[in-house]
Image (cartoon, rainbow, N blue to C red; front, side, top):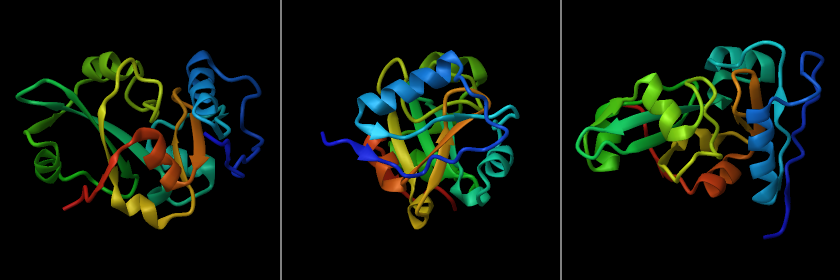
Length: 174
């Protein structure tokens, strides 16, 4: 795979110089996938879409919320990448996943992804997770996803997010 370069590194004064182990892991995986995407870790949290948008200097719609659901019949994790401006319609997502879904509890999220709620990145999970990408994210040139810690984020093009995650593009809001 030819290296893909994201010209989106935004050096900011509130960023930490060295990445935490989890953020460094995400950075390493992105590079292994052929993307020169820069994970940035801030001194302030990026756990919520609002916090992340402030740190990135972008609209809340450009923030990728990584939400984990649990299939009620199978118990499998389902990962939904949605715009920070949207609320996921669980009934619609249940239809997409082919089974009823429920919000996952913090322990389930950590076991399924290796990361706590508020820090789930699109890559670096212990096993593949069925994933869906909010079609509303495709309207932006750049979106910001979690970098694996509660203060790390990174910019990328929505098409790269879809390619990296192999997520099915769907409508997630009502």
